Image (cartoon, rainbow, N blue to C red; front, side, top):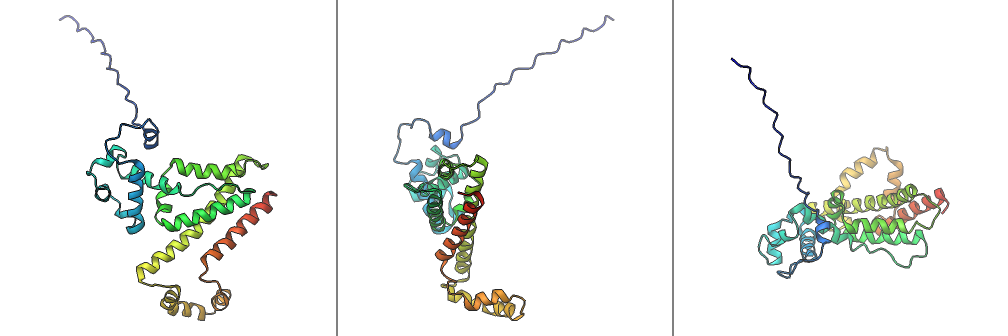
Length: 251
């Protein structure tokens, strides 16, 4: 028998490289489409934020959003692909309320004003700190840009500038997280005031203090006069952070 001819290897068909779909902010930055209705990204964000503020982040669904907006269930999908992108819209909307301070005389005044404003916004929208961990939006970046710009005229390298911004931001979010946690505990337990909270926790607190192991804490319990002044506590801590930055960097 004659030898079989070897088959020539067939060329594999070229794969068509499809461009990845544009992410949310790239799409929204394009020229606006001809309006089909009064629905806009801003309206969507406002409605979703209102639901989260009133009932918590878990209450925000695409169906619930459509109901509150009075639109068809699929209408919002013209702008967002699902709940993940809706969350980005919501976070961006809230960060837009953290308007960069204007007219600050120096970096410290700018940082203090920004910190106070951030605290106010986070307390108004207690869900946003958790949601913002997984998002990167224009207004989030704008807040960081403003913080960095307030340090730009100082003799600092960019790594130090960012470290300063993050130190202040970490203090603010840590302090606010404690305030929000206490408020959520009070709501869950049905405690309506700080005094009612202390009364409810008194048995275990009394036992702890009576062990004699925590004398300085006991002094605080017995002598403190600003236990319920969250604003004062926040500002004292903030000034301590800013004092430390100024002393460490000589600015």
